[in-house]
Image 1 (cartoon, rainbow, N blue to C red):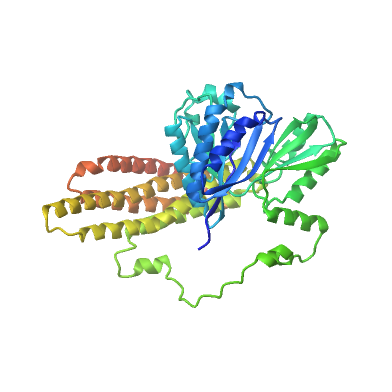
Image 2: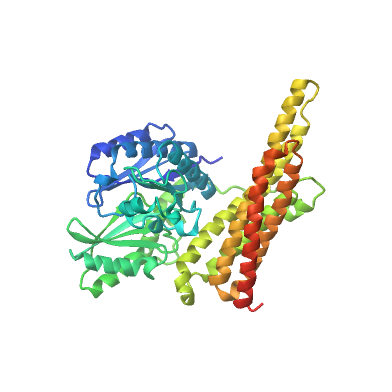
Length: 511
C-alpha cells in the first residue's frame, strides 16, 4: 500500500520578522509525521509561504500548531504589505499528493476549521473544494475588503458569517482553510517601474477579467520593479509557457519586456517539463524519455485475472438486505449532482454565457463535492444497516447484557438515521444548484438541469423514508424529534424549490 502523502502550504502575514517565522516553523517541525519542504518570504508582500507534507494526521496537527503560534505573534492591526490578507494565518490549503484523495483533504479542512474556530476563537472560512457555498470557492471573494473591511462587515453582514468560529475578528484576523489541486505561485517582473502597466497586464491575464482560465493575477510594485503576481490553479489546462507568452505579448503593447520570473514555493516537475517541451518544440515527446523518470520507474503490475466486480445496479438487485433503499437514494443524489456538474461544465467557456462563467465554475466545484459525498453515502448507508443488524445479535442472557444490547441498538439506529438525513441535506443543495443551472446555464442543457433536480428530489424522498423508518423503531421517540424536524424543514424547502423549477422550465424551457 502506497504511503499517504498530503501537502499543506499555509501563508502567514509576516516576513519582516524572521524570529516570528522561526517560531512558526518550529511548531510545524515539532510534529514528527511531517517534513518541512520550503520556506519563502517576501518583504514587500510582508508574507511568508511555508510548505510541508506528511500523513493526514500529521499535516492536520502541524497546521493547527502553526495557526496557533501565528495567532499569538502576529497582530493584523499592525500589519502592512502589498499582498491582500485577512488573517495572521491567511490561507491554509491542503493538497493530495500520493495515496490521498481530495475527499480526505476536504475532511481535514473541515476538522481543522472547526477546531480553530472552537479552540482559538478565530473565524474560519472554507474555500476551493472544501467550500460550503459557491461564492466562497474563490479566495478573492472571501478576502474582499481585506482584514480592515472584513472586521467592519463580519459582525453585521450575514453573507460574511464564517463557517466556524465567532462572527468577530480578533487581532489575528480570520483564516481561510480549504482543499485544492497543486497551485503554482509564479511572478513575472517587467523592465519597468510603472506599476500601472503591471496592473493592466494582470487584468488582461487573469480569468476573472476575461483572461486565461485558471489564472489569478495582481499588478504590484516589488523591489522597485513592476510585477505581475499570479497563482496558476491548473497548470495542465493553462501551462506556464502560455501564461509567460501572453504576458510577453501584453508587455510589448506598452513598450516593455519581461525582466525575469520568480517561483514562490514549490512546483510540480510536470509543469517545468511541459514548459521545456513547449519552448524547445520537442516533437512526439514522451515523459518516459526523461532519464530520471526511467531510473525511478517501477514495473507495471500484471493485469489482474480477478472477475469484474458487480455494478451497483446488480448489487441492488441481488437478494441481499444491502444495499437497499437508502443506498439507492444516495446514488440518485449522486447522479443529480453529476448532471449539475455536467451542465455547469458545458456552460463554461461559452461566450454567450460569459457573465455567468464565475458562477458556473463555483457551481461545478460544489456539485462535484456533493457528488463525492453522496457516492460515499451509498456505502455508508449499507454499512450502517449491517452494523445495526449486528447489534441485534449481541448476547442478552443477563440484565447487564440486555442493557448494553439495547443501548448499542439505540445508538446504531440513530446512526442509521443520521446518514440518510445527511443525504437529504446534500440532496436539497443539489436541487438548489440544479435550479441555478436551469436559470442561467446553457439553455440547450436545461432538461439536464431539470433531470438533475428530479434525481435529487428522488434522493430526498428515498432518504426521508429511511430516516423515518429508523426513528420510528426507537422506543424513546423523543431521541429522533430534532432529526424529524430538520427533515420536515428540508422537505418544505424542496417543495419551494420545485415550484421555482416548474416556473423556470415553463418560461425558459417552454415546457
